[in-house]
Length: 213
Image 1: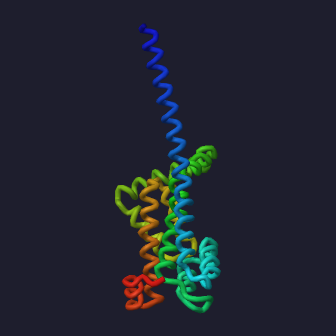
Image 2: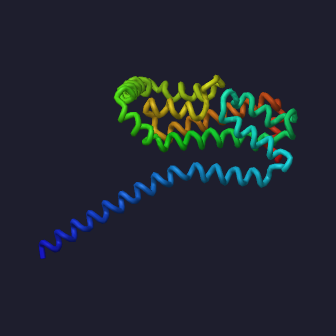
């Protein structure tokens, strides 16, 4: 009887271990696929409300945003102006930029384990990674790291943006959640500033209040 109880306990433990392992795999799969589904549903919604004569312009500028030297400082004015095709709603232009930054950040931040897998198998990268994280601990204690990364995200220099900010944040040991939060706040601030500078204060307020499409 005692042997059967022991067998039952062992079998139950093995079953729970397998369930836990399967749930971990499912969690990683959901973490990986959720940003892609989010951006897909977002674009389905946008294309359903976007005027047909603006779809080509919108698509071209969204693709251009991922390739240097294009950035917020060039893509946002082009979206809002009538120089190349019809002007696009400030709400669509602004939300698109923020969504692209946040989604690209989430994909990198929440799948950082893959980058760490590569880093930990290359000696020089592993040593550099460890050194960076040790230096980052001092900045964390002084509470300057978050602010420094936020400024890095906001200031529109070549090479700064959602992807590069996330990579730097994760290299310095910040959590995935905090990395994405920094990108979201920084992107919202920068995007709002560019739209405000292009439209002017009163037109910016009107765009926010009336939400034109």
